Amino acid sequence: MITQAGREKLLSLRADDPFYTRILSLYESYGEGMPFVGFWVQENDGAVAAAISRFEDTFSLYLTDAAVDEEIAAFLRFQDAGAVMTTRGSLTDYPSDRVIEGQVLRYTGEPYDSSLELYAPEVKPLYDLLKSCESPIFRVPAYLSFLSDVTHRRNLGKCTVLGTALGGRLASAVMTVSETADAAILGAVATHPDCRRRGLSRELVRTLASRITREGRAAYVFSASEANTRFYQHSGFEITAGFRELIRSR
Image: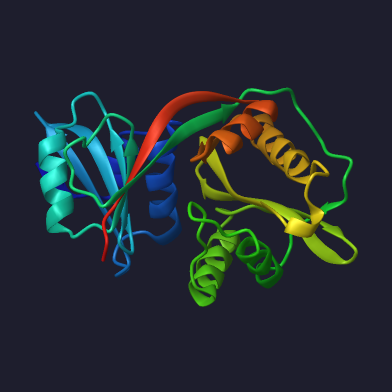
């Protein structure tokens, strides 16, 4: 049975799993009652078998071995989900117009501190940098939505941004897109097209991942391309799982 979830039920699943990290970080950032977020659990025989979150029309799933895919798929159809992030191999019959598959990687490299001059950039130059790096698998939301979300999560300590500048302009940046007490997920790794092939992204990724692991937390990334996966592997990450993002046309 799928029911709305409160803090107690979500915390009963506490783990450093990257899919669970996405859900718990969202809950700790926005809580219950906001119109653009939602949280549910699936329970079997009195035990929590899965957790589900919604941010606008994008859903994230954390599935245990006891999860029932058929019930979750029916629930997502009822919710009119626009996109679903889940583990590879789950929801194989869920109707979708597009499927993005990739790897989940965890940082296992040596501690590292970059010699670059690093700082926490403001939101607008960060947004402009990300827009310069858009691709079919990397899309940036509207500015006001991005501004509101990043500012809110930074104020709560749920979003860390590192950047470095060249010629007085933000040249490269990386941020955490989800953070909990146990883990963090890195994302939005970007280097301006004019500043590439200098190793800037690798410096930032290794430094931020090292800071997270020194705190006793796991550091993850989601990679949707072979080139990005090789980049992260060369930066000290190892593949731990696969993911699927199921997208339906609106």
